[in-house]
Image 1 (cartoon, rainbow, N blue to C red):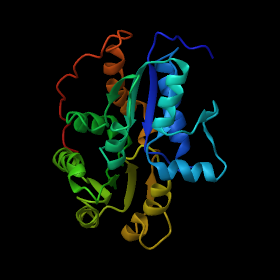
Image 2 (image 1 turned 120 degrees about the vertical axis):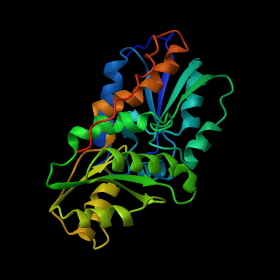
Image 3 (image 1 turned 90 degrees about the vertical axis):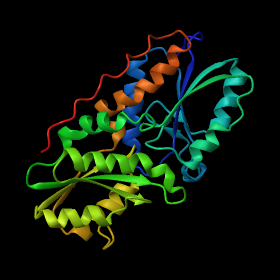
Image 4 (image 1 turned 90 degrees about the horizontal axis):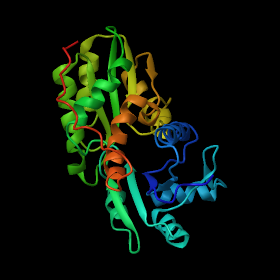
Length: 280
């Protein structure tokens, strides 16, 4: 494919996944980005080195049907310098900041003109907007809905947007709760409220970029410690956020704002005030 050299290169910086079940979510997003930005050179990097190393060690060196090489951010920066490319937008494919996000921001960019698009919940207004986008997937009146987040136990402060998200759900929706695998708010209160509701089914919605091993094992697995087994209710689940066009359209606004800095696109309008949904 011949790319238009005057356009900046788009780098999607993902945490990464070694799960075969999670990679289709990433490919779905890749297709959305390619369709929304035709003619752009779209590359991917894994910013969590262990994911990248494990995939390569297993013999997988590319992603998707279009065979995107699995590389680190520093490796792609080197490629761009060698190709004579200068303008770059790095869009982080993360829900909240993490240590590898900070590390990626510190990767040397000498010789390049780099702009950064930040995690999904970096703008606080995206809490309400993403919930509204996910609401059509919530369970019915006979079903508890639990949004499943990863979280961070090493730096609990990173979980602040997730705590606000949990409060938003509890304020505006009935029987919709949030859990985290690591750090606050955890699972204890959500599980207690789910049992107290008396409802007979549960639907787990991953507030995760891809529904990989965390969903298949920690959430929907057969281990006694899995969410499904702990609640003991008939359970269903959804694909990851990367397969949800409504949520990813919100995520891509950050990308568009940064592409516009290179005079290639008109930036999206400032999001309108969010009208809060009626309690269910």
